[in-house]
Amino acid sequence: MDDATLAALRTAASAVFDVGFATMAGALANPALLHDATSGWAARRVRRCRTLFTNAAILALAASLAWIAVQAVSMADLEPGGAWQAVGDILVDTAFGRAWAIATLALAAGLALAAACRYRALPLRTLALVLVVVAAAHASAGHAGANGFGWLVPAMAVHLLATGLWAGGVFAAALVVLRGEFDAIDCARYAARLSALATASLAGVVATGAAIAWHELGDSLSPLFPLAQAGTPAWGIALDAKLALVAIAVALGGFNRVVVLPALPGASPRFARVLRVEAAVLLAALAAAAWLANGEPPAV
Image (cartoon, rainbow, N blue to C red):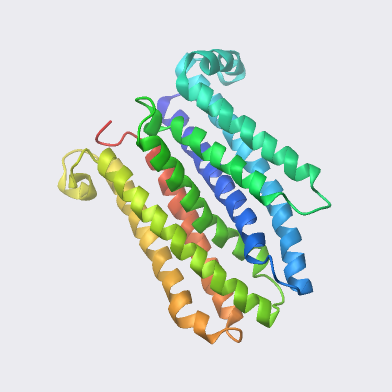
């Protein structure tokens, strides 16, 4: 299997993992936003979030397994059928392999716990701790942990969690909460809380993302202008695409917060429509982020 194919498969697995992880975070955050709602509408949405969390955990776990298989093929130069023979060596002999194992075991534990709570409320605090462990281990397995534990690892972990709360909160809202009929009072209160969560999460994304990007850019802004450079500056183009998508998502969220939110509850359908567009944009942004994570930044 050629290097380009392996890189594409690794990027696809990372993108699916990121979407699954973000959706898990959003599926946990949304019931917390509805904790004091008393309507049947809210109760049904909480149950849907529980199902969404389980499905997202399965998706993230499958993507994690696919990623290590592709990594084994790449590192051991094996055919896909024999890739699993090298996985054990990777887990024992490499730091990123051990970090991957911790993240994957935490995902499996979260999935098992959610399955065990099928007929009762999810233990939100425990599952939130699981996501923190997954984020920290995932950060250690990437560029942030390439040179050992340093400030980049916790910064990347916080970045992943903040991104998950923002994007995942929007995904969960678009997929299961703001679909079908609306309860006027509970929906209006929920929309205001969702907007506040997205704003706070965005602040964390921007703060940690700026620090991480400055490090990966090699203390230079030149990769942000890839067309002015010689060669094929694909990493810089992908970075610009991600920043543009994030800016569009921020604008959509800002429109909902400033224009639509004051008109609730009557404008609930409009709020949901804008949110679905924002979800699609954030999905594309996560795909671009996965490409960046599996590429080689200028400072590496």
